[in-house]
Image 1 (cartoon, rainbow, N blue to C red):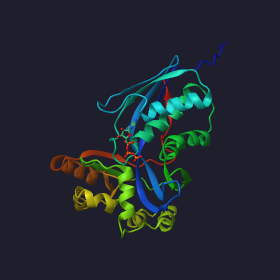
Image 2: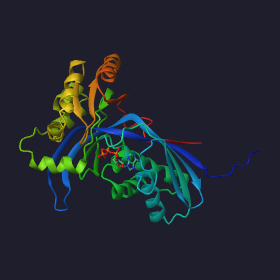
Image 3: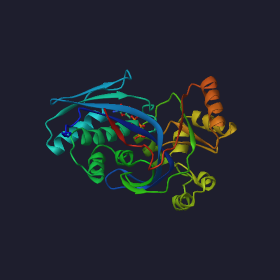
Length: 304
Ligand code: ATP
């Protein structure tokens, strides 16, 4: 006969996934200084890997990317500290991050790490926080974190923290190309206010097309109001868009406030060929990935 003990395990491995914006609209400026947005966000397979290990009280961090802060400023560190404070938790954690998502790229890499840390701490210390509670904690740290916790295809409104799950976007190959320029998100929103004419996405029609699983119609309805803003300062955006289209992308668009451009492709081979050309002919950081649905292995973690 066997005796079963419940021994909390000392380590969890968890993924923090990148996102792209399939649509991004700005509806206005709020009294609190933030912009009211309506954006359809989509999780990608591209992910950072976080290994969380219990330790006494301290929070320590290792990131494999030189130059990226590995202290209290890192969003993963801040997420762990928030859990300690809000849950009255004495225990600490060592967080080891393998970074794959390009940094400051419009792909919400920091938010992905923060979301993974919140979920990971919940498991590591069996805190029993619900998804809603995790999202409320996440929203305190950054507008994109609740989405990163939820994953899949989601309409985000408000500052981006009010979420409504949508039907999964049909599985699609995604080519990411980040040009070597930096774009500050606050700058992009400020410049948007001074930009006179932009093309607004029709989110209602996009969601209707999504409901019908009609990818071609979705693609025709995709737009990001920040794209002309960032493009005016960085002509490389237009160059990458033209290259992606010329090499068979169904559509090519900027994610978030940029500068990463993404292309959606119907065929894996066409995307791989385009990736090769970008690597040869441009200075872009190039990643080939695909969309992840709500039932994907998405935010799940693995106990070691
Ligand atoms: P968003 O799309 O949400 O605006 P982003 O993809 O443009 O985000 P991030 O990769 O999240 O940008 O990085 C923005 C800044 O956040 C970085 O310049 C970095 O200094 C800081 N940061 C803090 N923690 C992290 C982290 N774990 N990973 C990446 N950046 C981090």
